[in-house]
Image (cartoon, rainbow over the protein chains, first blue to last red):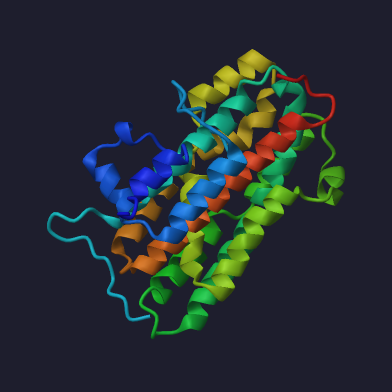
Length: 63
Length: 237
C-alpha cells in the first residue's frame, strides 16, 4: 500500500478540499511535518467544519 | 539541532509566505468564530464580556513579550535567532505599553467598573492561549511567540466593520476606541513582523514551532468566542 499524501490525509479528514488547492498550496501541505498534519486533524475534530465566509470580519483579540 | 536554515533565495518563497500559507489552513475556523460573534443578534449583551476576554489577553502582552526577550537573551550568541528576537520583542513590548489601560478606560466609559473587571478570574481560553506561549518560549524556543503575534496582529480590526458593528448593535462608540486604535496601528505591526520573519534564519523546526503556536492561538480564540456565545441566557441557534 503506498503511503497516503498529506494532502489526501487532510482531505479525508475534511480539513481541506484538495480540489480547491493550487500547486503551491499542495506543496505547502506536503512540506509540513507529520505532527503538524496530526494537529490540524485534531483542530478539525474539536472545532468542527468551517467553510470560508463571503466576508472576513476581523476583530479578534488584538494585542 | 544541525538542520540548515531555510533562507529565501532564487525561486524559493519567503518564510513569511510559507507561514501565511500554513496559517491559511486554519484561518477558516478563525473567520467562522469571528463571524459567529460579530453577527450574533446577542452581540450587544455579549459585548462587555468580549471586552473582558480581550482585557485578559491584552494585559498579558507586555509581560509575555518581555519574557520572550529574556528567553531569547538567555540563549546567547550560539543561537542564530536570539539577538534579533530579543531586540524585536523588547521593542514591541514598548509599543504595546498601556493598551490594557486604554481598554479599561473604554470599559469604564460604557459603565463597567474596572475594579470588578480586574478581580474577575481571567477566562481559561486566554490562560491556555498565553500560557502555552510561556511554555514554548521557556522550553522549546522563544521564536514560538511569532506564531501568536501573527494571528493576533495579522487580523487587525477594520474601521469600517467596527462602524457597522457599532451601528447595527447599538454599541457605544467609547467601547470601541481601543479596537479602533488597533485598526490603525496593527497593520504596521504586522508589516514589521513579516519583515522580521523574512530576515531571521529560520530552520524547519522553527517554522514548525511558529505554525503550531499560531494554530494553537487560533483554537483558543475560537474557544473564547464560543464560550461567550454559549453563555447561559444567550439565544440558541
